[in-house]
Length: 414
Ligand code: CA
Image (cartoon, rainbow, N blue to C red):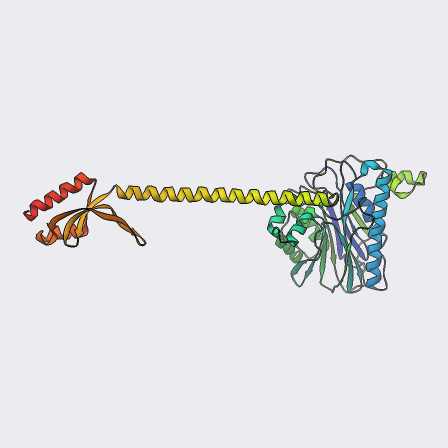
């Protein structure tokens, strides 16, 4: 009986883009996601070249250290092929690709990573991001300039600091080794998933959907439900008791899965790989998700731009604060003026008096004061009048208040 499939790879062009520049690979021991980028062309070429070259490292290794070394070498080799390709096809200058890959050796994994595709692990219901993005905004987060929440909506969040491509002969590749165990579910994805679907949503799907294929499909659907402005690729691996056979034949998805026309040329014309892969070129829409920084000057420009943004934010805050303070002060002043246009007649230490304002106090602030005393003794009034004065008699204006005082004066016989 064939083993139950324990891995899955799904890639979708998304709802906005016209071509898929992502590539994915789910093999026997090796699993890869690559997210290509390029100016007018090349993103799909870059990720396909990288995924195909790295897939050659899908083998059983005697130790996880060997696997780690082989995976790293495969990424470096892919980088060289990309550089050669650009050398021969200058129109592809600037193309590059992220790569995140894991290579299983028994109960351990070797990981290699460059760019902003991600590797996550679900273990005992706990969802953990394993890789760190090589992005400009992650640098800003690491240096304490912005919060992760600000990074998620930062206008420069797509700027990558490291990729495979033609920019660097010795790319800085993160590698690491992890223990793994039956029941672990590993997920590799392009930012077309992780930028649009929240961590807790991804986690819920991984926890609740039993099969790798079902979960990968659900994750991609979730991104589509969020509008999928970018290509989206998910590769899932469930760790079981076997030594690695994943139950599905090695599978490419995304641009690496598309049979390019040069492949038929290859049979007829033995030309070396990069030339073959790039003929003919496919037109791609203007790329807006990734930029490769060109040296430190560019980085400084970005940091300066970020500073300006922060300043603008502070100024907007200050202006809003001043407006709020003025509005509150205006309301308070308006209320106070209104209270001071009111009068009432009441008892002031045994004498009838005309008060300006209203009887309420706001904390320690009294909203009324005696504005005219009289010689009328409250005790000289009838019981009813005394009670009325003690309870205060409201007046519409000063004249009205004076009339009330006159009436009381007459009643008191003064
Ligand atoms: Ca992307």
